[in-house]
Length: 165
Image 1 (cartoon, one colour):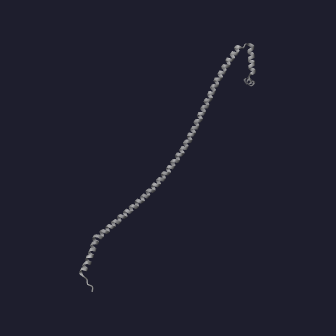
Image 2: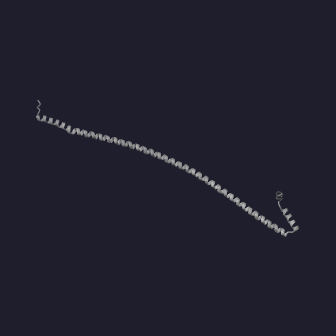
Image 3: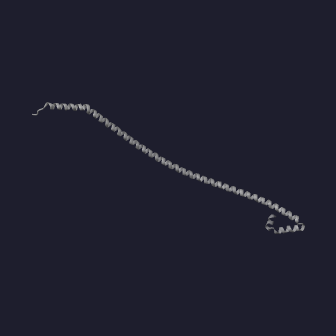
C-alpha cells in the first residue's frame, strides 16, 4: 500500500498552517488594502466625472453668456446707429432752420437797407428839385416862368398827370 511518510504529513500540515497564517496576516490586509484602493479609485473617478460635468456646465454657461453679450453688443450698435441717424436728422433740421433764419434776417436787412437808401435818395432828389426850382424861379421872370412851367407840364407823361389828379 501506500506508505505515508511523516515528513510528508508534516509538510502538508506546515503548508496549511502557512496558508492559514498568510490568510490571517497577509490575505485580509491585502484584500482590505485592495478594497481601499478600489474605493479611492472609484471616488477619484466620480470626482473626475463631477468635475468634467461642472466644466461642461461652465462651458455651456460661458457660451450662453458670450451669445448674450454678442446679442447685447449688436443691440447696442443698432441703437447707437439709430441714435446717430436721429441726431444727424435733428442736426440737419436745425441747420436748415438756422440757415432759413439767417436768410430771412439777411432779406430783412437788405429790405431795410433798400428802404433807407430809397429814403435818402428821395430826400436828396427833393432837395435837388427844390434847389433847381429855386434857381429857375430866380432866373426866370414873369412870362419866361410861365413858359417854362408849361413846357415842363407838356413833357410830363399824361398817365402820371392823370394819376396825380
